[in-house]
Length: 95
Image (cartoon, rainbow, N blue to C red):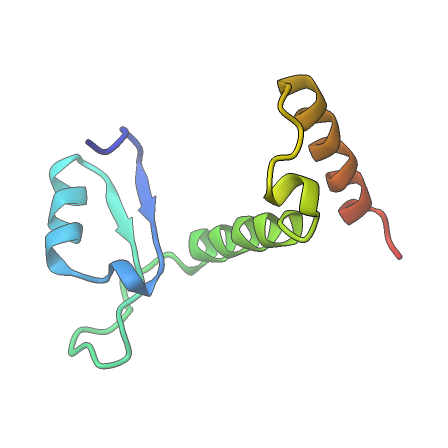
């Protein structure tokens, strides 16, 4: 079951008409680029939203460089959130 939203943003791996039709049935707009061998072009895609998706994905990739976050060493929620905040601060600071 898909959550309700205005847009569904995904990468090329989810490029299929079945997924696009399922998204349209839920009154959402699919933001999924077509594969390179597709006969239909990418004229209807909102590239600005797709770039935001890419930025979020890159942020998660940077967070996974911190071993304590990637393997979830901290068992308590407060300690994990503190480590996550520290990692975000380390990423945010210019080095």
